[in-house]
Amino acid sequence: MKVLSSFLNSLHLDPSYCLLSVYGVTLVLHYYRSMDIRTDMTMDDVQFEVFLKSVTDLSSEKVYRVFDMLDVDCSGVIDFDGFYLLVCILVSIKDGMEKQFISCHSRTLFDLLDRDADGNISVKEFERFGFLFNLTKGAIKEIFKEFDVSGDEILDYNEFQMFIMACVDKQKEIEAQRSHIKEWLQMTLCTLL
Ligand SMILES: [Ca+2]
Ligand SMILES: [Ca+2]
Image (spheres, helix red, strand yellow):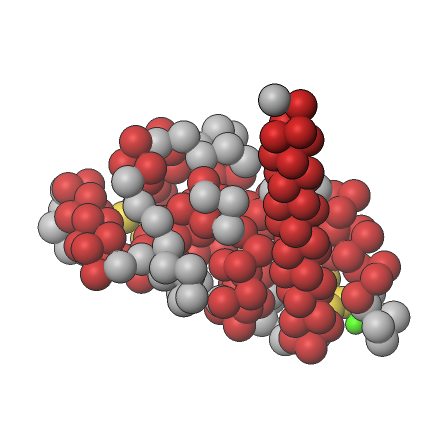
C-alpha cells in the first residue's frame, strides 16, 4: 500500500510512543470534523472510502476491509478514535515506521487483527489485513512457519509478540547495514577525492 497525501505529509509520529503530538491530534480532529456532515462525530462507509482512496492506492475492496476492521462494534460508522488510529497507521507507513508502530501498539493491533475475537490470529485473519503493513501472503506464510511455536496454525499473543520483536530486530539490522554502507561510501569518496 502506498500513502500519498499532502495532509498526511505534514504529520509525524513521536519516535518513542508512535503517536501524534497534541498539535497533530488537533489537525486530525479538525480534518475529521470537516468531513462530519451530519455533525454527530461519525464517519460512514462512503465518507471513509472517499477519504482512504484520496490518501492511498487501495482498491475499494481493501478500503472496506479496513472499514470492517476499525468498525469494532459493527455500528456501521467509524468514530474519531478509529479514524485517529488509522491516521497513525498511515503516517507510520509514510515515514517507514510500520514495524515500530506495530511494536508500540501490539495489543491494539492484535485485537484488531483478531476479527473473531477468539484470542488468536489465524493465517486467514492475518492475510485479510496484512496488506496494511505491506506484508505479502508469502511473508505471512513465512511468519507463521517461524513463529507458530505451538504448531496449531494460529498465533496467540505471545507468538505474535515474538513476531513483532523479530520484525523490529530485522528493521534495526537493515538500518545498521544502511549506515555501514553510507560510512563506507563516504570513506571511499574521501580517499578518491
Ligand atoms: Ca481469531
Ligand atoms: Ca500457535
